[in-house]
Length: 100
Image 1 (tube, one colour):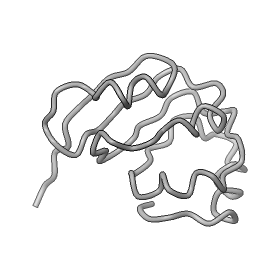
Image 2 (cartoon, rainbow, N blue to C red; image 1 turned 180 degrees about the vertical axis):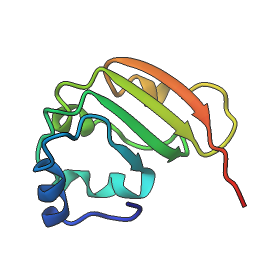
Image 3 (cartoon, rainbow, N blue to C red; image 1 turned 90 degrees about the vertical axis):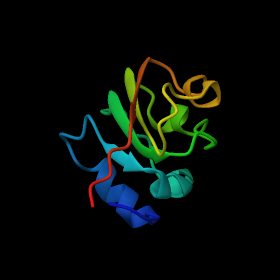
């Protein structure tokens, strides 16, 4: 679901009982301040990151986060230090593979 999510959207997301591994596009990161905590989420995939995003607000939103997969916007190899130090847990990085 690319784009900014409203508080009502986030309430619907939080109400999903089986949500354990969301995939979130960088465009949705801007609306995280309106999201309620998502304690069921243990694994997170962040898609199309540029490497300069502020992810510090995700710690409170995802208190039980164990793994993070960074899908970077370019082939930079590993997640930049400024991303990986902001989130707890085990981190992996993969490049974006866009298909035309």
